[in-house]
Length: 157
Ligand code: FES
Image (cartoon, rainbow, N blue to C red; front, side, top):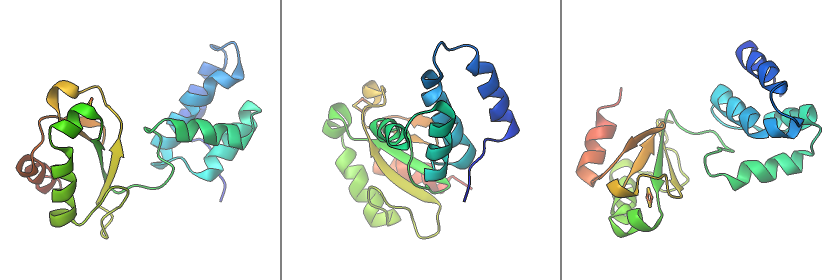
């Protein structure tokens, strides 16, 4: 299976190409575009980006695995990224993980059988003042409790 950027992303790449002094500087923007386009960064996308930037696929893979915001496998329709760093750990992230396991049937790294929800644990998202917090499809939710989490998930179509 091959990967190509869609025309909108190709246009963005064309514009960025002239703005950076080195091709390698487009690594992160191109990984983001691949993720938004496909929902995750496929191995084919890594090979394609590496070839275009004249880098090795292993170099690209190393970058994609360093940043927890890059997804290297498909996720459900709703991606729950629960912060596991200190403030959120102290304020109840374990209770949320336990609740998600019991009520919703997902543990960290898993997707529900119907493909609706994926739970990932991530490092600090910068919302420590509202710990425990999570990002749901990139929208932050703070001071999350098992009850507020249920209301949030049950309210999704
Ligand atoms: S520790 Fe959870 S957002 Fe910072």
